[in-house]
Length: 113
Length: 116
Image (tube, rainbow over all chains, first blue to last red; front, side):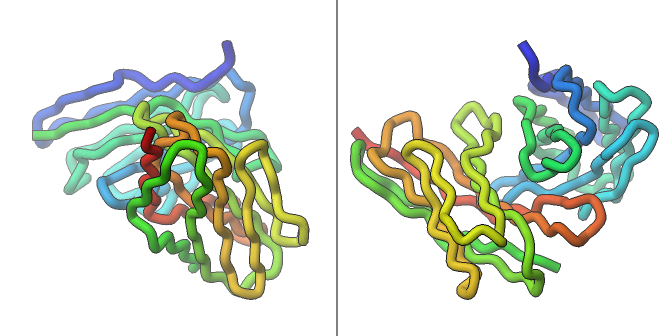
């Protein structure tokens, strides 16, 4: 079955530690995205990538980093510089020229204490 | 920058009835795309429906339809014959065709509860 996988579903870290969230897709989609979702707010874009080896900052990129070495994979690292990292993180992908029609993964709930 | 406003934080509807969720947006562009996404309790987002601004005809997908009022910058979602599985948070989203990256801008969402 084609789709997007995110792992793990729940992640716990101590403050000051970097943590990497995984996102893999087998839809052969060109673009991939990372969003953050907080209670009472819509999704906010962290980073996105439209082609391999290229990515762009979204609206809230500070304290995050990404890589896109393979078309299928777009891992997100939450660094210790991110002031409020506890949140629900969603990864998505889309075909080129259908950027708005995004397919989402199941999400990762990150808790930092 | 474009903004998307969903003025109804929560709504409820009886099973089999019809409900309309509101969305307004702000843009100076003439051509763009609008979307409704659904996030059920499982939290996996699903695209419900899309509308291209240059098309006059309102989009329809089975029980879901939109009322697109371009001049008023309004994009409401109508769900007919509501089912328990429609219980979810619904997000309205805007996408520019001009800005690099064609990014989605989401509203804050409306929680819809379908009651039996």
